[in-house]
Image (cartoon, rainbow, N blue to C red; front, top):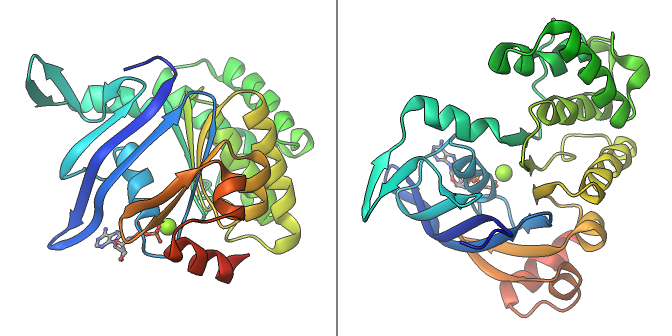
Amino acid sequence: MSEDVMVRAERVHKSFGLVPVLKGVDLTVRTGEVFCIVGPSGSGKSTFLRCINHLEKINAGRLWVDGRLVGYRQKGAKLYEMKEREVAAQRRDIGMVFQRFNLFPHMTAAENVMEAPVQVKGVRRAEARERAQALLARVGLGDRAEAYPSQLSGGQQQRVAIARALAMEPKLMLFDEPTSALDPELVGDVLDVMRRLAEDGMTMIVVTHEMGFAREAGDSLVFMDGGVVVESGNPREVLGNPRHERTRAFLSKVL
Ligand code: ADP
Ligand code: MG
């Protein structure tokens, strides 16, 4: 697989019990791009992100991150399920930011950001704290390092969550409707942080209803409906001139 591909999905299927949710997702995310996923509620967007990050297991098809199959080792024509340690190593390279920030409430912003590097990577606390401070500054919260989540706004908490994900130095960031739970006036700061991250070259998959962000910051966009990719392309083209009726119907509701 070529080096400039970060994620490739081929005919990815996922069911919960007998209910199919992903019905053959095909897509390619190039290294360094902002890849937006839009679509109605229930179309499988979160499930797809969760499959990339080992939170769900696909039932059929193939999924690669950075040239390696997700969850499987390939030897010749045979596939072997990865051991837990290999799965953990693969997950370490992927940062995820959820709609709900899920910070540890009993830890300060800095402690939240330090936690994984210290616990998972064995980074010394002093060094982790210094790095946490720098990451918090990067998301515009350099002066709130000692604040607890309850003392921060939703937008600030979400920016701490982004810093926390970045602390593991991921090569891929997944965002699942990161601004959907925020009051409207707090959305802009979070999107600004994501734009800067994109400018710095981070590969990002962003599930969002923020069409302005998708249009301006997105390099590619797919419209998902009913567990498949219905339409894909340049965000400005897909959003400005959707080809499929389902895409048009969806966009007429959200734009
Ligand atoms: P989206 O993020 O596009 O709104 P989801 O991926 O969350 O869609 O969900 C797609 C469908 O899968 C929904 O019908 C949802 O109810 C179902 N689903 C998601 N997770 C589970 C689960 N763990 N068990 C059963 N059904 C699920
Ligand atoms: Mg979702």
